[in-house]
Amino acid sequence: MLVAGLLMLLVFVLCAIFAPLLAPYGFAQRADADGGFGTQQPPSAAHPFGTTVGGYDVLSRVIWGTQTAILVIIVAVLLAIFIGVALGLYAGYFGGWLDRILVVVFDAIYAFPSLLLAIVLSIVISGGQSNLWGGVLAAAGSITVVFIPQYFRVIRAETVRIKAEAYVESAKVLGAPNRRIVFRHVFRNATRTLPLIITLNSSEAILTLAALGFLGFGIEPTAAAEWGYDLNKAQSDVTSGIWWTALFPGLAIVFTVLAITLVGESLNDLADPRLRGRRRVAQSAGEVAETSVVPGGALDAGPGGLAGLEDGETFDEHGIEVKR
Image (cartoon, rainbow, N blue to C red; front, side, top):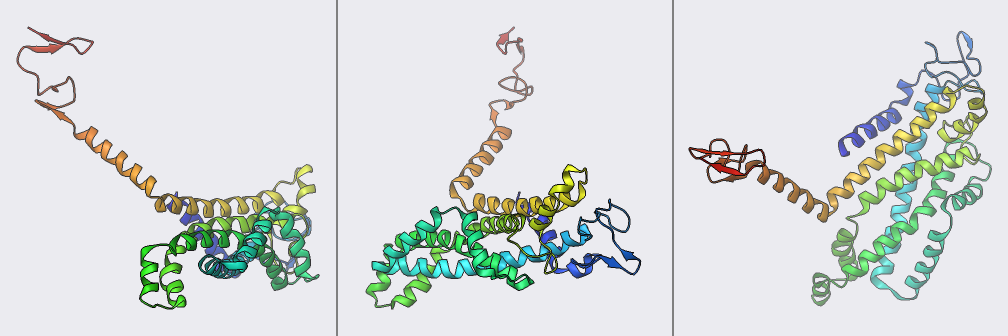
């Protein structure tokens, strides 16, 4: 799963980096030197994925959409990590009234429907902006608020556990300042699960971005390519038998989320000591079964194997030894 996920994720990242070279047209381009592309044109040599109802090239918008998705992932996850980890470390280590307030606030945000919260915040943050960075920051900002409680809860719980460990108490006794203890001892041990959370949140960020675009709260097509918006405009095409305008953006979402999810699940398996122990036991059991022997030879035919049968011995169809 890890190898498959990494390969799919590599394709996604390469498409985002080299989108200007890979895409045959611009994300908002409707015509070339030969004239207009036409609307809802089926796949052809000039447009391998066809064109949309707005006259855009589907292949180009799918490729350019990887840039929008990766920008939202980077901005949203980095902001959520910075704010959530900082508040979680402070609240878990120092406690007090601020810790109690933060726990109540973030529990309330965590219990709120995430998509509805993202919609409200996207409307507030965007302020009618339809350019690339305005739309990206609006989507990323709304997703960030949804993700912060997750990082806060995980880091706070780990910090509360770690600060009671003997090495932290020893550092306090030796006179180490709180800043050194937090960043040198607590932070390093409390953030071990972050890679797993980052991968899961990245896939959720893509789904949230697509949902915002599908519901009409995403980025305008003239500002950037966004898969959710393209799916929204392709709804009427599906009932008319025009399948290409919805199929390829939908597949892009599915494969990207699948790639990130495979990587996250694989990291979870690698980080879980119980699963590692089970794998070691299974491997050992398989080796023992393959190399098991009994006096007389390997267990190939009877209890003693073909080479281990004594002279005059044989076995019936039930495996019972018959001596002559």
